[in-house]
Length: 236
Image 1 (cartoon, rainbow, N blue to C red):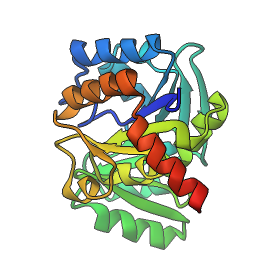
Image 2: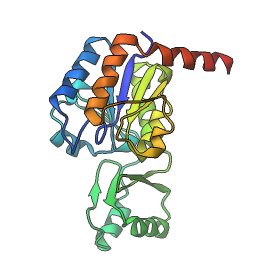
Image 3: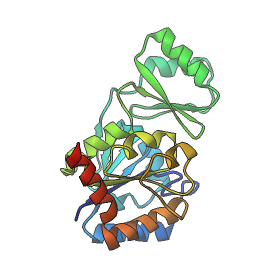
Image 4: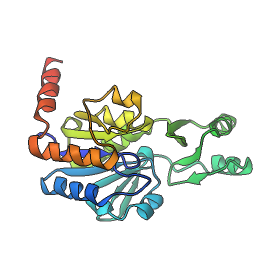
């Protein structure tokens, strides 16, 4: 087996309007039965994810908060991979009455077009933070944290090299982790910029596309992609 794991985004990739459909859950069960490891890589805060997705047990590990938090669904263990959310920043944004503000273990989030107020607050406080966009969401995290760094922590825990991972996503914040994987995939509904960068674009959208990808992984182990990447690696 060449591709030993599937790293997948949640919203817009696995899920539609936050819902994981039964057919997609069944595909993830088939993936696990084949001996491969499903990993979720999401921008959602953990408490919110637990509320909307009842099948976290399908995943070996979950990277939440856009790379800032690692969660083991079996043991319920949480590992913070970044500094906690800045209390100063939260107080300042609350005082400015920034709408839709949410605070996770490390992430602070709101919605466009309030990134201007967020950036001003970060500058005034002199904080080393970045803004990441995701389909209208404005996420604030430490400057060295993204989905790629979170996935790297998950793969280290599972003792799997990134070249043996298939990564699939749909949006701006998925570029980072998908490009680090041995096979980069975008579902059919992905943004144009991501569609241009990947090895495979699924025919189906969202969960149907992921199920299609899983069945292809089980049937062929994506040998054509594996052979291509190994030739490039050896040549390099």
